[in-house]
Length: 567
Image 1 (cartoon, rainbow, N blue to C red):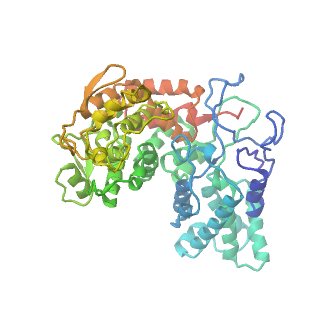
Image 2: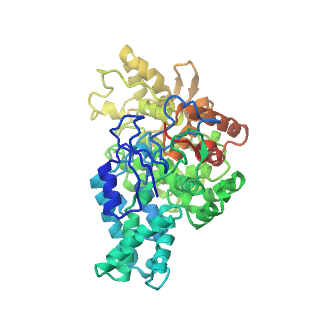
Image 3: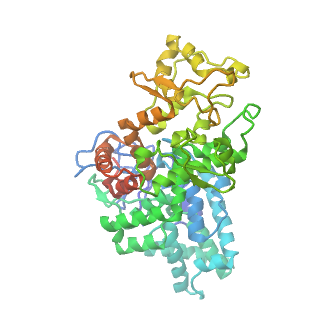
């Protein structure tokens, strides 16, 4: 295989370690990251993985639109662990403790943030050894790798081809099989047993760039003509988007036959993937980051002020968000009801907080129209995460809504702005009328510009305290007033008025498509992508705008199924 690899942190030294230390099937020239653009350094006829998103100006030679390109995509921790579990059956999950994931654009699967240095590679190589040992120490797991009983070359090559297909997410070329067979013969020459020699092969496969990275090749790296990604590359794009893992046997078979390249058949494949239990991983990853459910357990709350707060309650709050989102991700609910649907998922912990009787410790779907609570903005997870540890924070709640639901990024506050709570431990900070104090705070012109844009969204939610419990008065006895006026002059009251206002905004309808797009491809939205997103949204909103339908449309779009060479 002759591959031109380009990555901002993948140096000659580190890739040399990948290729040589692990006996990889990797040949060709590595791009010199210090070479000037256009110098010809690191060129190859084998293809290119690209070096980023669509970038600035569209190259003049692009034909029929610009679907963009993407970097070599290293597996993040969850993807690595899931792939090892699904392909090899090993539940060791070494990525959870051996390295952390980098984040960009709000997600931990952005290719540009996936760096590897020599120390990181050593951890990968050590993890590969642990996994290989685990597989070969378990007869059932070993049987999925060692699929023949003889020690001849044909058997060894069969083992390499079989497990290589599943780990590399594509068939191995003959020269790659020959390279990994050399690992086997070298181990045998050192006196290792047949099993230990095959175990060395497995470790080499797990340490290889072709396993650690999702590598897509361009048939002509000098051309900017858009072209379909290969059938196996499309299978990987789909599986890592919806399952956080490698393609299964059915997806690989659809790639082998070419069925996955047919849009009608691909649409059916996407629907079956969404219905699969493994799509819960998508929910846990995408929603855990976009809607913050991952952060609930880490959220600080002063338990002397909110004695109901416990780790168990925090876990229940996060789980409700996952269950609630799945209603929309797997069903046919309109996304326009995401903030309005009177649906909650409660166990005994949340039932006590919400005032809804719940004797079952397991989660149950409930509808209660008398509790003032509905939609995502009524979930305790959101309400707690957007509060301080000692009181509600209308400004934070407003900022969260703007950034995450409307994709509007407010200006950072100017330097020297006085804090609202000079002493957070004082009773006034935790018990007083937050709305009245914010109105006084906004009398300072330095404070007014930011707060006027943010506070109305949060003021409407003041009936919910800092852990999401309903209240009619503050602790000092003053009544809660949830009526508000936006900087644009729009008036609304409470959760109902807020949800109607936010849902009616065009930004609410477009933001989720940008979030899903970014997560699905592991890259940011570029200018050239906007024409595709606009067309997708128009068709999506013309029908029943469910999250499932939007996901399908994003995956059928050229931006998901096509690419071009890097600029």
